[in-house]
Image (cartoon, rainbow, N blue to C red; front, side, top):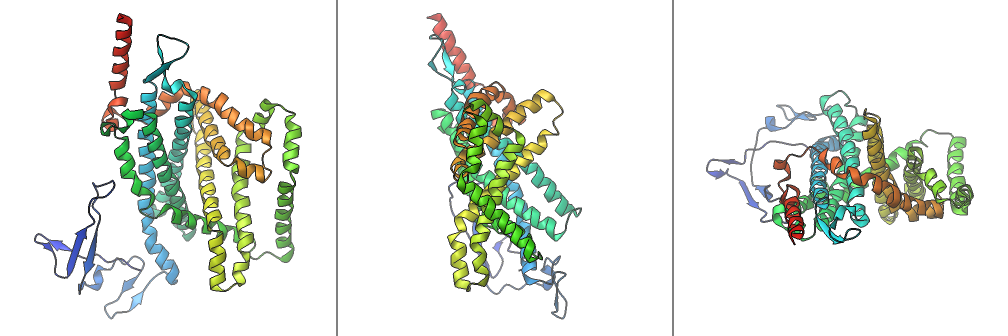
Length: 455
């Protein structure tokens, strides 16, 4: 596959042999036109070939510095990675904007009385409201730090400083994983932020509904997210298979025996039993074993490695099966493949967040960001507690302790810093442009308080 450039119109419209139509009104992002082009008998010179990876001489001879047809194909479509990097960044910005609006509004909007019968509570002081927004804030920070690592990899490839085949494959895999996760997350964050602002969030002037509509298509263009995660999964399987390539029989036997032994420990409940005994009925002690950085890393990494190993084991018969049977076997494991890819991309986001903490010079700021990183990591683990329990990676008590630690420790610690954390995004009023986050709600609350005082 090669790209040519083709003139399609002049001042009078389409050139001879060229036609096209607009696709019509879409569900969102109508500032960008989508349409189709068709060509009938259009000829262009061979010099219109974009020939970095292939050329045609005057006598019609084709040449390419890339011998493999398959590699040429993936090299050409690899330019799509630029769009995926951009979409990842756009999704991060949209998530930040949504949370800036929702958390600012939640810090000003008052509803229901609690301790003070004369003054209603700020809604962000309610635990459920914190649960809705603060874990998503942690996810947004993780996505933002991950995007920085993606930009560094992108610069390395396109500047030529790190432009090997392996570097390009790494960039392709990173872009596919991060684009899928961040665009899905942005849709979730925008929707939750809209609902957290109640009816005010549904007003067009506060932008959340339009942002949600515009970002909807991000999940399927420049690569459908589900397909992109399948690309990541295939890379994971490829890397896993390299562990066995060239190994002698004894080494392979040792690796397989290690996996079988680990699986039997997981299934037997021995790991669970050991945790229960160590914790001695203490929730505090159970929390202490899961909240530290290395334990989070071990749990997140172990899940990815175990999932990939299990899938690889199930797919091994495909190597000697017919094409039809191999395709059926792959399809039977497709959902697990995609879940493994998602877990891998989440791990990379957690690693990017953790690496960024080391570069924060101010100790109090680093402490708050560490709480936020812990909220991100423990929320990931909490979402998959069934898997960790089934595989014996966590005791029941530690599973309960994770939720308790999020609700009783991390959310209360982060609540006083919520506004500072969204202020750090650096949005000016002209970026936000949402009245409920630009002073209108605060003014309304002050007027209501003055009216109550006057009565």
